[in-house]
Image: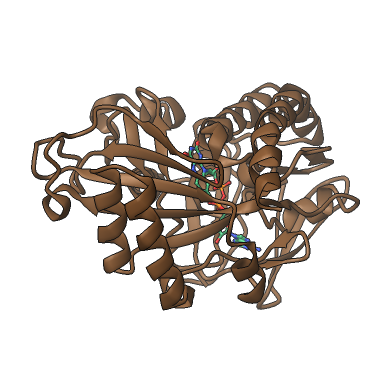
Length: 371
Ligand SMILES: Cc1cc2nc3c(=O)[nH]c(=O)nc-3n(C[C@H](O)[C@H](O)[C@H](O)COP(=O)(O)OP(=O)(O)OC[C@H]3O[C@@H](n4cnc5c(N)ncnc54)[C@H](O)[C@@H]3O)c2cc1C
């Protein structure tokens, strides 16, 4: 069913449309891909397993005119404009969702989990957990680092691999930390086992006025692999889930607070301590995936389903945007066909592999220090 209770239907083609696509996963890569495909005239059904995709609050570098670029709309018609520069994951997500909601040829179905993907020469389909089969010309997997669609494309290489460290993430309000000097730029701090990436952010309403801004922080920590394994967050070489605040032991919060006092200067230390006090911290074990394929026949993958770099590359989001644009360009040239997806793979595979490999040097040396 749709979020609004209407039954789940297949995307309907129109005589003037190049065809139909199912996009699995309505987070940033899925939302951007749905928008670029619709700009190319494709009728899209987006399938999302959760009703709230609230991710880890990473900060993302937003290029100038992002919404205009992917929707093809003039700035005056973009429903929720997004300023260029560093933005929170949530700000980017909300702006993309607003663009989806006013788009007449994109249908979003939440609470819909895809279990399996199939195809023949004429079409591709998904099977959902409530046993519905939905068919379209193409299926695009934007279902993240533990992608189900990837299993169809690369059954011999289906899993991203744990990189050997966790990132603790939080955001603090300027009013709560009362910084005397506000940082102008991204900061890199830390010692051998701990690297901190700090970034100044606008306020929740996009304001950059003093008093209403925020500080985001991402703390790379290679000393907590025992905790990740004992909580089941990492099992073998596979990352299973993030550590949400309720699953982080009080003792770990106390240790993090003590280490933050010792390792980091103000205002970053204050932002971390404020987040810890509010229990507003998420720990994400980092995974990496170097793709061997991006498409098979009428099924393709984009975003973290296709390539998972360490966030240290700062490029997962930009790379997802390139995927979304490349797949729409290929469909503009070849229609909703397997030829288009083959052309997409040719355009993107080398760059996606290079991106992930560029971060593996950092991951290997950072994780090794903890081994
Ligand atoms: C801790 C962290 C920090 C990061 N920092 C940065 C950064 O600084 N800069 C940067 O550029 N990038 C960063 N990234 C990466 C960036 O956030 C992602 O590359 C980008 O958001 C694209 O993600 P995605 O949409 O492909 O995947 P996801 O955000 O994982 O979304 C996948 C979606 O698919 C849904 N889904 C999964 N399986 C199914 C299924 N079977 N059926 C239906 N729906 C399904 C999920 O619910 C989810 O909504 C970071 C990532 C992490 C984890």
